[in-house]
Image (cartoon, rainbow, N blue to C red; front, side, top):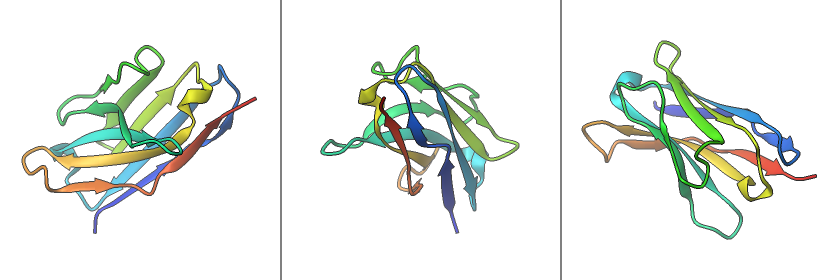
Length: 119
């Protein structure tokens, strides 16, 4: 059974940092593209960053480029999202996503971890 478990969310002040982690189980991790998405209240879920299989560092969305960095450790079946210079607009539930590199229909989601940026 495929499971994605996120951790690391919480309350942080503007300008602060958080590091989110996602642990995958039940998948051949090397064959999955991994992504971080977020969904703010009243808004649609959006892509934050993504790493294709075979790479260690991901590409970030324009809205977080230069502040967020995504990386993966295939030996540990984990991906990370380092978030720096956090802004109130970054407040959202952050979800880990796994998409098979050949069969896009094999897509899985974690349960989400909440990030609140507030003073």
